Image 1 (tube, helix red, strand yellow):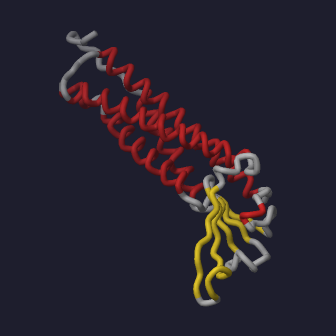
Image 2 (cartoon, rainbow, N blue to C red):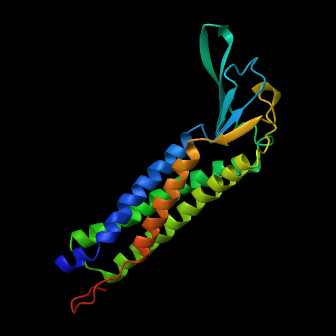
Image 3 (cartoon, helix red, strand yellow):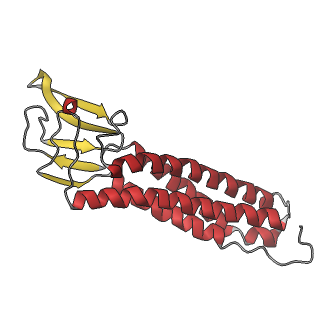
Length: 212
């Protein structure tokens, strides 16, 4: 029992990294600061800055209140799938998949660690759960990496977005920069990949009393 527990330290770390990576994936998906647009028309976008996320676009405006008060105006983008760019549409789907797959990876790791720490010595069962967790973490990391990389590319090349007229957003910014959601997503990818590596590296100790 003691020797078996001592072989699972990396997998325990995999669970910790995977959990943090999954949480960061969730945070990244919810943040609106994926792409920060600088615009020259401040009639409606009073601050000259708009935040473009994968679900909505927001900006500060004084138009609907007064020159002394400001409000954050947000427009949801999930109802306008035909007008949003592919990198945002793909990000919506892949990050949802990453959340589900990452949660399954954590559950699989928990089952394997539970078997080890409770002395349920079924070699095939433990190895299968760790392998499943590793592939699930790897899948989740790829699902986060694709939209993060794609949106980063779009920012670097200052690509445009054809927003609906009701958004009061220009299709082309003066300049744009990476928002906070992308670095959070990158850290999530790194942690999920580490979790996958640690999970897939598990080796059951060879003993005369191995279960089957």
